[in-house]
Length: 421
Image (cartoon, rainbow, N blue to C red; front, top):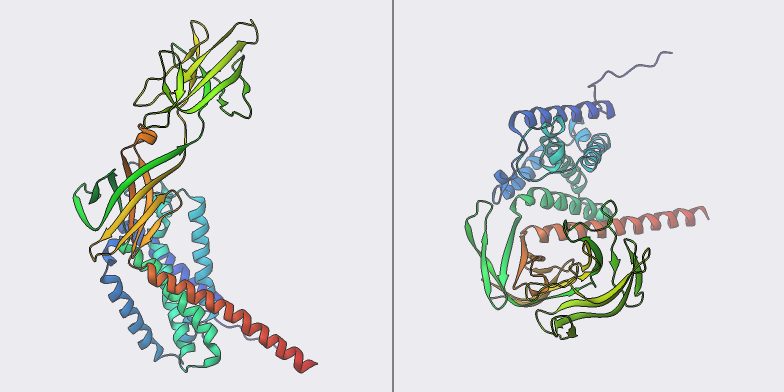
């Protein structure tokens, strides 16, 4: 008896049709990418993205009237959703393997750049796949939501939370704004520069009470006094100052740390003493001996800063020992935040410890690198994201739904085991 073979595009559609349909979406995306360039998210800024979301829900509601049609069942079914997710995963892998860029492209563009792979999240193929995932997920939610069943609460939490998360993170990204504000100590600032170098007044103001920095001990190195090159030139050698390990070797010289003062002020032309005050700089008394000749010398070395001159230890007419500038260990901005609706807050802002106030997230961005800990200003990055609350709601619903699915699954297994017993 011969088995009848199902022709392609004959209902019910399965994976072959899903792969062909998604391939068509990718093809259309590539054509649009070549024709118009990357997708411009600025065209869906609020309120356009809100209107688009409402239209999407209305479209899905009208589409739901055809819920008994095989096309609707396929569109909200497993083969199509799995194919979309697999395609999004492949695009994500390509994005991970391709260096991503920001801003406009300048100069000659490669084939990968023309395809939008170096700006994957704004490429037309990625945007279209993302959009169809939202539609397919929304169609599935409506199919399970009507008629409403209490026992499907875990499904509702999980999938509605995922839809809210995808919508807010994707379409809401067009409303995100980033600014860098430079604030001097004792002053209040609310103005920033736009990308076009125009002055903008923000609805949030920041007062910088104090900026302070903690530093690592500096390093010692031997340089050529004529060229400034660290020795040996092929593989520069550095000695990390550590009072627990005071001895080391630098470019054929044995070095011993006799005294180290992290905050020192010059006491005379050649000596230093410890003073905790602005302008203090690390200083060390070092003994150095040439391993080959036995020649030795000792003296104070200081890296200096904008308040006091550096000091080196001359070894001979060509080489000398110098101290590098200390690297920052921790820098903190003591700030007072005020908004136009009269909200106020005090915060200690540092790297990897941002502060959130409403829809604003504040990050420690930078300072005067030349002045170091004597910097009189702090640079703070302000990120405005009005969609952050829906994102958190979606994440919480998704997490709650996942936990409920695990719990309900365990209950079903226990019930089956009891029936068998």
